[in-house]
Image 1 (cartoon, rainbow, N blue to C red):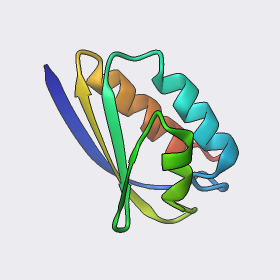
Image 2: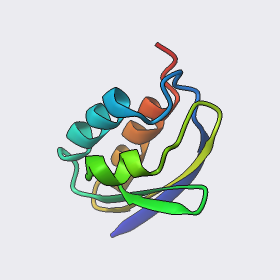
Image 3: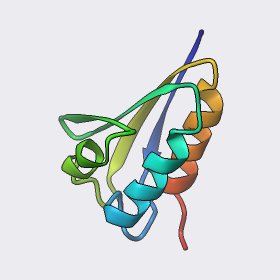
Image 4: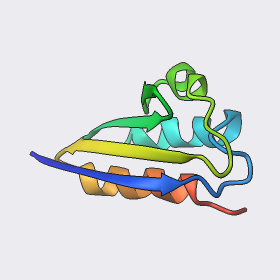
Amino acid sequence: MSAVSAEVVITNPHGLHARPAAVMVERLKTFDAEVTIEAGQKTANAVSIMSVLALGAGHGDTARVHSEGPQAEAALEAVVAILTEEE
């Protein structure tokens, strides 16, 4: 089982709010990986929309993403792409 992590500055202009969070949750359900996101002092299960929204992570904040499982790298890449999408 593989585990990867990355620290990402959120450049998505909407931060990690409703729409980007919903897209991320749906996309992550397709991967065989457990993903968590940390922002500030909070940690969220990345497939729980309420947990992700509770982070309150906005544009310019730094998030730490941890992914573990057979598809850990692909899941991490998907999260990083959403957090850094500049629309």
